Amino acid sequence: VWQAIKKGTVPDMEDISNAQSTVEAYPWLLMCGQAMMEDMHDSRRAFTNEMDLILNTLTHQISDNKKQLKKSRKQ
Image (cartoon, rainbow, N blue to C red):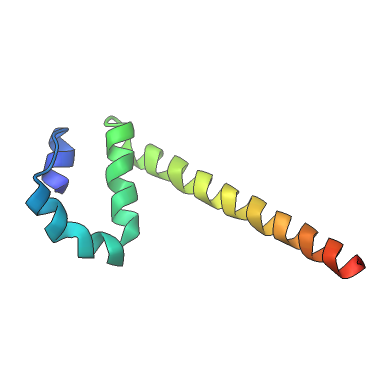
């Protein structure tokens, strides 16, 4: 699967099903592959941008949850 991604081709369905358990155990591998597809010249930068996006989203969700908790305690 990773060879196909590296070459910019579509992996065989059989290869995808064989790799499914690996992706479930190590989801960050999928993110690496996606980052490679987004920016073939600098996959590291693309990956860190993806991670920043995920972490920023989590930060906002935590902040929103704290605000909702404070509101519910006031009522």
